[in-house]
Image 1 (cartoon, rainbow, N blue to C red):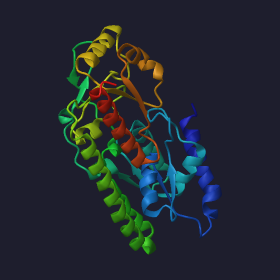
Image 2: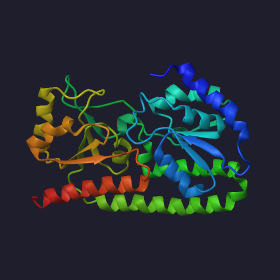
Image 3: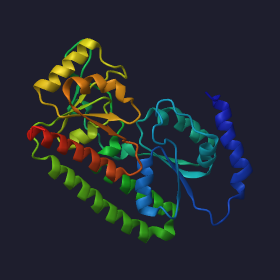
Image 4: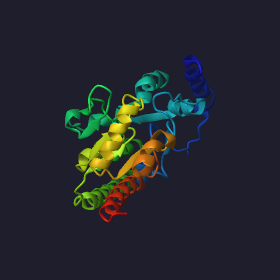
Length: 302
């Protein structure tokens, strides 16, 4: 692990030695936490601005440390758009702010009103009780389209302050992207509305807000990052069989071996997803299509 003062100092020194030499034709730089945020920004002003993304596919948001090059771009960034709930952000944003006090940090989660977590339909297995509702706030807000509309609106407003000469272009593209988000939302609603069995199984609770939006019950396997005990694994297997649960989702960064026993014992469809994928639209459609297909196959006896 790199010493903290070396990482931050490297970014500051790089800024001192290179920041003042930026050409007048270089694009303004903004920073974000995730690739899906870059996708939104690219829909609005991709050719006019450089987006510095901190976490790439497969990076662990609890343990990741920025590279010197990322810190150099932090020192040159006018804005930082955070999701607001990720461990990486809580650990690193204060340090980034200290290295660039002029950088404006915008917490996107503060632009929406989150429902109380108790109202989110998410079952939870542990060794003390069969199921209960967990209180952990799932940070994957970007998988809920109505929330993303609020995020995009906020980002567009800030981009106009950075690129005032592109205001008309940005606002026109914003409206077009908002319409596209509405179309995605409608597609998901229509695809899932007729489902009778609305339960899905997931290793790590990444679809809480998607499930809340579309009235899906997300049943979570792991407990506080720990795999279930053999006794609880048997309970989950029994639940899959008795409740005819069709599919289990696991994020790409988690090894398939963790759910191999479930798949072998039940024949359940295993779906690997990547919530941090750049192509935000494709991620949502992929999740929806997998749920729809798995349940259709179950109804057809396949």
